[in-house]
Image (cartoon, rainbow, N blue to C red; front, side):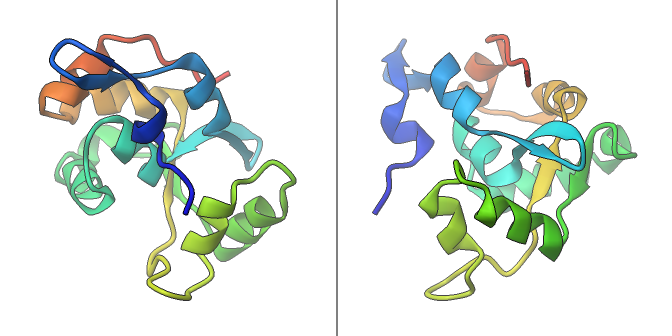
Length: 137
């Protein structure tokens, strides 16, 4: 079983993980001509279960209107990612539909969307992570 992001994060201030630039860089994908991060990776970085992370986004939907902030992947987007040579096996297994694979298509967040997330997420880890500079380059 592959390690999640939080398994590789450095710890600081009471054991809360902090972002590492290399970890984040590995979670940035180029989809539809835009650099994005996927909801399940962001959820883990900010200390949420993906379901609760997406609930927070939906509760603040007005802040994420338009594809400048986020968009939901299509099946074709996912297939293209799975074929990508540097796409991790962890993500590949999420979309196979086997053994508890994901039942929904993930959301992709642009750099603007990630900044907007920092205004709506709550909790100790989300607050600490929001104080770090995240640039989707």
